[in-house]
Image (cartoon, rainbow, N blue to C red; front, side, top):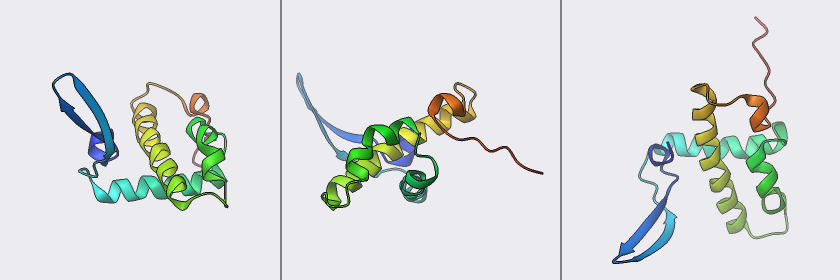
Amino acid sequence: MSSYTGLCPREHSSGGKRRGGSVNKSGNPRVRAMLVEMVWRMIRWQPEYHALRKWMPVLGDAKGSATARKKAAVAVARQLAVDLWRLFTGQTTAEKLGLIYLPDAA
């Protein structure tokens, strides 16, 4: 799932050495942009989401570095993509992820 979104890290391997790199951005750019935008919206509307709680000290720090906030948003977006896949395939529930689920009113 992370590979499709382009949110998985590059890997540099040679012999017995492995080194992780930056996000490869080789997936779908529209999905990637939508997931990152969802993270910024979730800060306000889904504050109990488990990945947001982990990264909230970085995301909520207005005086912190913009680069650190962007990296944290990408980290949460990657986790969100995986969690949405798990949610829609029935492997977990919204409550277990800390998401507020509002069923359709219609």
